[in-house]
Amino acid sequence: MLNEKALDIIHKSLGPTATILHPLIGGMMNQSFVVENNKKKYVLYISTEQANEMVDRPIEKEHQKIIFDLGITSKNVYFDTENGIKINEFIEGTSIDKIDEFDYKKLSVLFHKLHESKELAKFNYNPFLRFAGYEKEALEFVKDFGKDYQDLKDILFKNKSFLEEQKLVLSHNDAQRSNIVKDTNDDYYFIDFEFVGNNDEIYDIACFANGKVEEGYKLLEAYFVNPSIEQKKRFYLWRIYISLQWFLVAIVKHYRGEGKTHNFNFLAVADHFLNNAKTAYSYLIKL
Image (cartoon, rainbow, N blue to C red):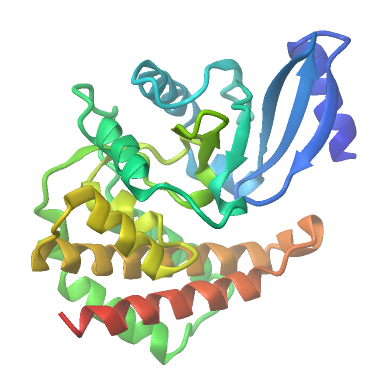
């Protein structure tokens, strides 16, 4: 059914000769397909119901244009702001979550280009306001997330004022490896701009640690060359925040039945992010 829907979308937007080449694996907020029309490749994104509830699509469209003008993403050619359906030009290359080696110095240049933008986003990201919304929704399904979750949340919220006093810059806010593409010239580009907003620059670096905390720390070192204790503290605290955030999102997706729909174990995802937060805390207490 989903492939039929995807075909219908690309035929209406690109033309009757457009075809689906293959799906893209990964991502908690979209079903994605590589498509082709007149020998040119594109990526089709079809958002999940939960993503559409979380994202202001007209603003996302504006933000994507800002980042395209910075030269660090591909061109959008179709955007259905009502349903969260997008088609972007395909970047010939590889998502870096599919490769073992990448250039942290080049990645840091990509992040600097974004964060040094003279044009800011239309709104601030407001992480803690978002967190309250994620937790409220998850509490509709689970009344107790366990001691580890509560202890980590308490540590995070004790540092809330410290995190909120940082300078705000244009930020991706979901700058994990799956949202960065390395092209055939070994240049790096961002994709997926559902969560763009003004935020602490270190939040994006912490996002890069979705898989392993250590990978985000390597990017922190490349970005600042010699990060201070304060910068390291911000990194580990934001890493705890992001892990708990995705823990809550995964809980909601599991109990909504999205795991069965997409053949994906969201409880395993929740466990991964809780453990990721615990790892970040183990580094934080060593500072």
